[in-house]
Image (cartoon, rainbow, N blue to C red; front, side, top):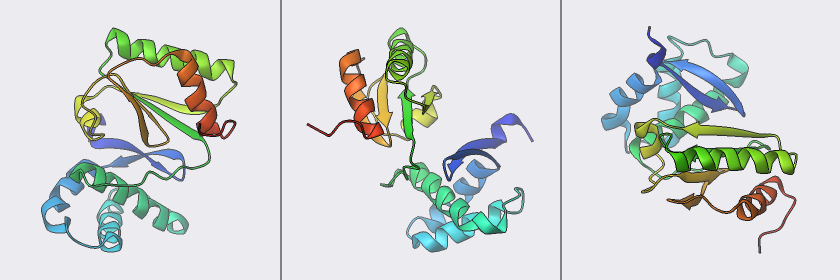
Length: 170
């Protein structure tokens, strides 16, 4: 099993490595596209349990996380569950602007003492799943905040404080 066969997903706010997720989702894509969510989640759980240890007390949470990934793969609308913390994603392959956005975010996070999950998504296939048409792109708690530019630090601070619940939307 190569490193590429393991995909990291969030289950209850924790990053978990899942073996064979992409292959199984691609196998199921055509047949399960129009099936109800609970049926798709159950089938993903059944198939992925063969290669991955999934504790019985959290199987339902894994099924929800698998379903979310399946919807992303199909390009269907989905709701990202917010697990109490702030989740930030910078989308971009590593150009100067993408790296500047990531650095600016880290500086603002330090300034406002925000502990958040910051991820820089660099793989083009993963970026494509978000449906943005420019880079860098910024996503905070599942919502696209900026595409194709690096927002000023004052705006980043405002958005992060909003996401943290310290500021109300204007």
